[in-house]
Length: 200
Image (cartoon, rainbow, N blue to C red; front, side):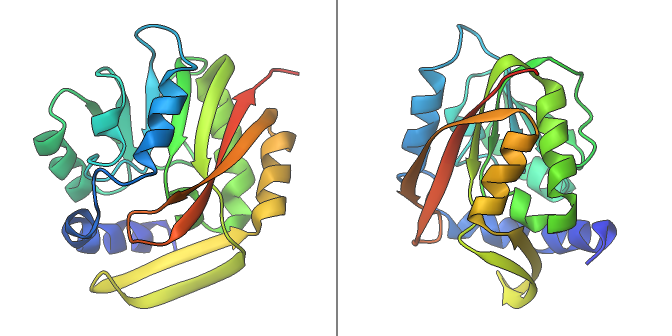
């Protein structure tokens, strides 16, 4: 899928995806762990925020949700009315450089072609302040596929593998702090990485 096709795919499934997830699942605990690492009144960018129930709703009030899907952001504006919302692509974030204290990216990066993941991580580095934190889902394997019937639509998934992803983060200037397992919104178990951006 190209970018426009992926955008249309998310528009088509935004409501079904929002309805299928438990907004209070165990992976939301990781957001609280992240918050303990941040300064008072931090700016947090939530990548692929969708309806925001699982991430934005648990982040500080002034957090910014970025999503490719306009419908997802409409749902977020209803459920998390205090959040700032921006429609955009994670390969070219419409966010000022060195402006964020942290980034969350739950179940997001593997919806971008794996050939572009290094670009995504470079964008994460660009918008973070030195010492900024990243909390991100790690892929379970190496794949690139379109899943027909996913949430009643079709969806693109792509990843170079867990170890390659961690390597790309290091190449982008991130130090891997720790990884943790948590149940994901659809009922299986997923690994997350906590990382810190350190300028060269």
